[in-house]
Length: 264
Length: 264
Image (cartoon, rainbow over all chains, first blue to last red):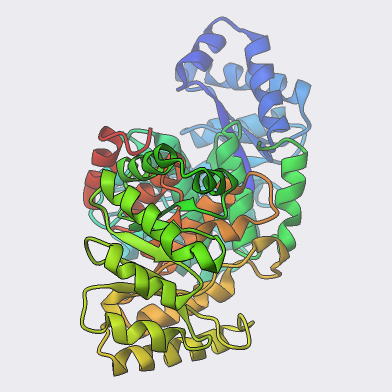
């Protein structure tokens, strides 16, 4: 499972505060803690006004790279910010994100075409988030067509089918499961990702819902996720699920992760 | 999800001690706690020498019934003990268990035939636990043939496909999933159950493995389980999974269970 650590995000009040105060220690600690907890990428999202986004992103990325060698997931709703920030990164990471909306793909794809950068692509378009599996898969095909024009291999793409809150759903996660299955069947090498915590919006004991969702999503083909690696139960649950799914023969990884203190 | 509370079992050292000392309080508390935690049945297993099994079971069953109206799951490897104990029960419960081994079905099925009693049937036979899904399904068909001879409807049968420890498996739980799918497809009204904690034998942080397994098993069709209802994370995870699976529209049950303190 590819873990994209979500903790350095200006939409989290304590991080917003740290950004405002230019509290280097706070950011460094979050980066270090996530790296030690088993993250594979550190997501960096400034969530500030456009005028100061680039300099804030640079400040955050520099801090993260001062304490860990992990690659960065550059997280901005503005694709131009995403490509600008690539120059601050010491190694190829992930652009978070493009979608079928506006010119996002046109801005990002040519820049990452001949690189090792990966990209998260959301299945939303100019009309917002499609309601049906069929319409999301239409956006998916648009994205794959465009990616193929730029020679971006499926293995560099993380599709986010868009995890929505469970509390207003009449049939649970069946639609997202359907989308995941269809995508994996068509492109076995593609990654499927998601912003896991969206599922539990407005519900009590959100961590339990997040965990149940991740287990089911992994069964449906999810192999990448934007989540909080400091939630040790979540990390343990992911290792346990890999063992149940037969990805971790004889539970070697599960036991190793436990011994390394990644959960406990 | 049908929860069969597993805590009153003489193979648990503290319960063995309570049985030896005829510690009524200990047994009553375990029954009450499991009932309050959301169990639907209270499993009662003496795990003592044959000579004293019946009287011990009666003592246990009486104590449970003195504090809760929940039906009993009569748990003994001896089918004659199971049917003898039915007379101590105020209402129909579950016989735990029969299998394809020896004369178990012949002893139990005629006695429960014209009652409302249910039965757990393990997919093992005279040669032990079959290794392949195909061989377990052969035992399953034997059981269903026999049950049908006695007019026992599938809805009164809980099939335990036999959950085995994950730590020695090369392909996770795929075989058990296959068995569950095949059974549910053939008999949509049947229950699928299992002694959940077997999955995590010999692993650290067993509760996480148990939880991941339950989520995946529910996806594969499990709707009944012998487990510890005092594990609040497990109970919350079950409610969360039902919501994800679309069994609990708009998360009403999840939210209600949370408000009632069934997890928190």
